[in-house]
Image (cartoon, one colour):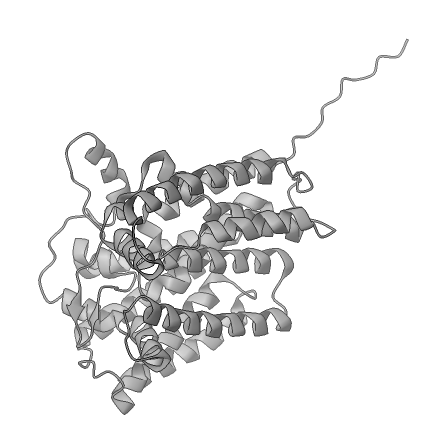
Length: 399
């Protein structure tokens, strides 16, 4: 069954790629799911992990979710061909302002890290840091300080956009980008990875997808998998060397559907609280506490995991109907934004964030997270700041 599903997705990938421009989110989406299903099918053939077979209900829900994303994409309106937006891409004022804010956020964040993790050895410091990030106080590091701390996730893609739009290389902008990337180095690996992926797609949308870029992306993806395996060993999540770390990477990529199947054995227990968690967070501030925690409990499948595909939350909220509707909206909205990427920085950045969410849709739903909407809102603001206002001159009055 897994091999058949992988073959179907791979076949559909070829059809979609032929109709899509290079690097389009829908092509990335189908490629991501095709690769995941192909890897998952290896377990059925060779017993790599020993997952339970997927039930007909799980396969049907998955097929519906993927099909509705594709339908939403193809029904989205095409944008009219427009001239490139006039933007102040040669000015360093905005990158410097963002760099200053990123620096403030980094100092506030590291002050909290040192306060929580001091008095340890180097290894103990990083293990404590990882614990505080996953289950401790740093998990809830929010407010203005928290927003500034994750600002490099927006500043870096913007810098990539500016460097792509400029006629000449700018070493200062490249230096700011490198330092901002260092600000993201922490146990929050997901944020670093998502920032790298979104920056790559910004570059692709601005400069186009070349064979050299494809080779770089494939090499970079392999390097990230190896780095993930090494960090699993370094954080004592995989004892036994790099081989066991690579096995953890395989579980990370393939366990999401079995986890979804295990989590959904019970009936739905919410009525929109997961999908609508962003507006409900406001009610939390007012004391109503309606927004649920989006954390997924660990389950054994047979290895432990707590990640699920993008349609898990709508399924828990509204069942199959929720999967169908939200999947269609995701495809439609992503296509609508992508079709308007020629209009300037804001559309390029948000499209890159959407494409990144498509990449990670096999293991999470980034579209409904606070981080995604924060990045989209800041990108819209930055696009407005960058847009060059037309110069209006007073008519000359002849004597």
